[in-house]
Amino acid sequence: MSDAHDALSQLQHRGLAKFDSMIAPERIAEAHALVRDLAAEHGVFVGGSWASSEDSFSVPKPFRKALNRLSRSVEFPHLLDEHVQAVIKDLLGEPVEPLPPGQQMLFTLPGQSNWAVPHGVWHLDMPRLGNPTSPGLQAFALLQDIE
Image (cartoon, rainbow, N blue to C red; front, side):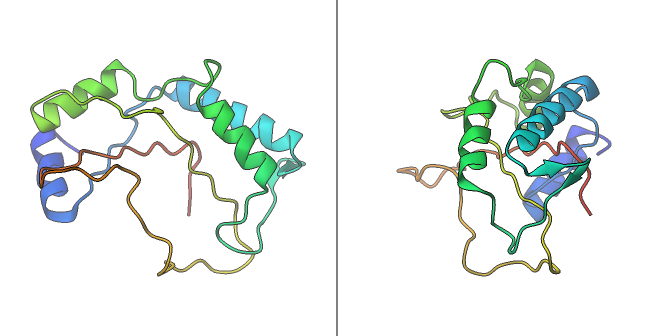
């Protein structure tokens, strides 16, 4: 994205904006290594490859619980750092406050079949507000390239 004006226009017209390389590569590498190591402990990353799941949302429950603990631990790098918060402030014109519990991990294993947009599982991961104002932003950081 070339500047905050272009990003704001994308948000207003499409509901999303993409930023490349906003988070320091070393933080992404650190987070990816922690996830990969945890996945290896749980048999989800074996021999340099990710296990595939039978459907789009199958991740073994013990691994999912371990991921949640990891993403909230002090060991896991904070990805919404001061730089990212400053970009969001420039974009929106005001600072934002992350909602508790803070960063969460969304993890999907490669599927055994072609993926299609599911129709029955979409939802918003934010609280309902008592007024019609904007509920805020959701920021996603990819730890690995996806196809």
